[in-house]
Length: 256
Image (cartoon, rainbow, N blue to C red; front, side, top):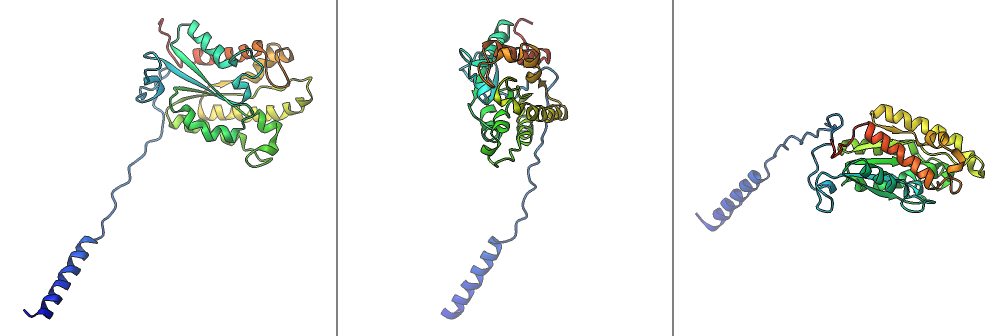
């Protein structure tokens, strides 16, 4: 074979190898994602590996509850901790092994809560959500001014919690003090609360009616300012969450 023929032969071999290497490969079947929450009634999911409940920072079998919301969750006006710390005290006194984390941020709106939602609930078992008052008081400051989509963000957070196998509880928005200049917002609060109640029914999750609880247990006497509460007011809110958790058998007491 002369040199020219040799180079032609090598060229054809190279082309053949490249064609084999570039042969079309059909993609494999995509992984099927199963969406749903498999929880027996009154029993938390056993899928706690790597979560806060599985962390050495808490005693074994600790139920981690996180309260998420704005300054009302934060506890503005309270002498210390607001309703989350009061709720923890009530649950511990009743014999439950729990920790209640306070993830309230003053001035927060629903879109900001949604942005941090998945990160906040990642290591929790139960998520308590109360949000919306700032959207209604200052709609011009929403992510989309005067189009806050509050109920839509709440629905998204409920759905994401369920997909993440957390137990979400949602609260109605508490009223403004009726003798304050901001009392104009109360009809809008009631309208939003009707949508929140509908979402709780739609997703079959516990609804905690803190709006009505404030109205029925002292009303304006419970406030430290126009929308925030005294310790007495926050204690009423804590009791509503406590009743929903205990009566719903969402956690088990060590004394059982």
